[in-house]
Image (cartoon, rainbow, N blue to C red; front, side, top):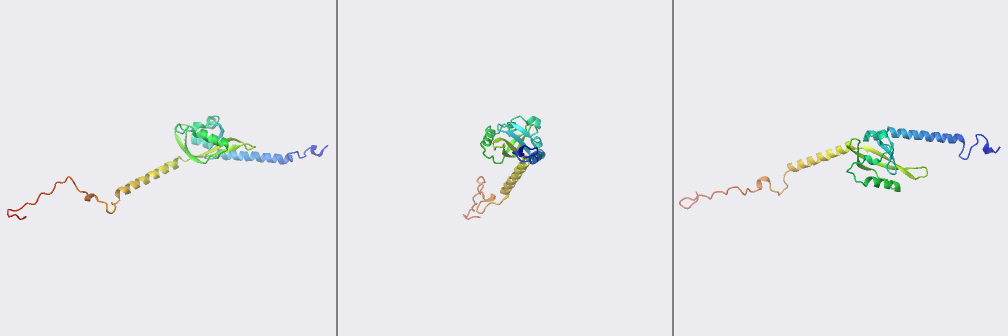
Length: 200
């Protein structure tokens, strides 16, 4: 019998035990990553290059209101509010197909109940073993409360600015309120003269 044909002999792919160990490590790593995705507070969504949703974690359900069963198989376009530019989604998908990086950005998405949600989005391509791009993974974080606080802070700053402008003294050389002549005030009466021709 040829040495390579003996039971237990290493095959072309290496020793069987080593192959089994690598397979087990790959499975453990996949389970670990799946656990991280599922337990994340962020919405993590996997989709194909045509925008079809293929994975949906618990964070996505909390953020958008749809369960995994309701979302998987549908287009990611269901999360885009009607007022968003219609070319937004096709432009993103085209960049992914061409391997062009999509920078993180802030936008709005639509909840199941119709409300808008302000989110910060990061999109990454998903590649197969040969390096071909086969889909995308997006991570969305709810920033609604942060944007609300920012608007309230800017509004407060504007109110304070207006109040200071109204209470500040006039600049040097500028006429004050009392310096403006009253054009409608009656003119003073002329001085009365005595019969002798001299002023009283």
